[in-house]
Length: 179
Image 1 (cartoon, one colour):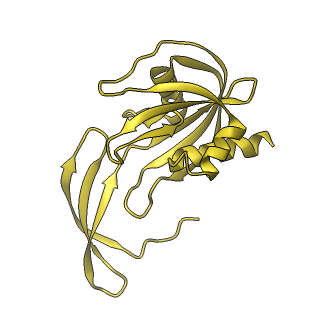
Image 2 (spheres, rainbow, N blue to C red; image 1 turned 180 degrees about the vertical axis):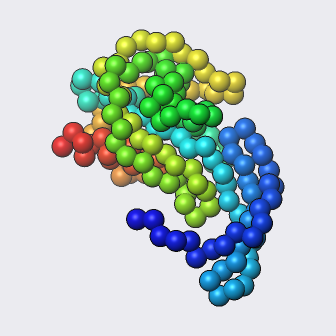
């Protein structure tokens, strides 16, 4: 449900512009009339893809994440390019990161990744009927894909071995769809 915002934006300035997002500082008027600076990460949105084979195995990837200093276990994901819709981005990201193409793609849902600071909207897709495509990793991407039973991946979420929130939610939505 969308409600009217209690905030009135008075001004906005770009603080940082990067490859994936822009950080802006907005001066806003609160309901009580006071003003406050609010930081917002503008993001074009992203897609999260759970590739599922006929044996109910999911394709997970391991990759080092600079921000956490850890090797993360995730499902394929990536940001939308300008003018790109979620379905097209999901097909592109799956092939770029894993070398697989989806014959069938189903949207499972969408959510804000961190709505307290960002407008990044993640769209979750289930990819099936997979065939070989062309791997096309971006500069700096070091991705190790592997197949893992969905039930084991869900246990890895519960046990804290998979700590990526988008991956955890995507796996849970797939499990719910299959139930």
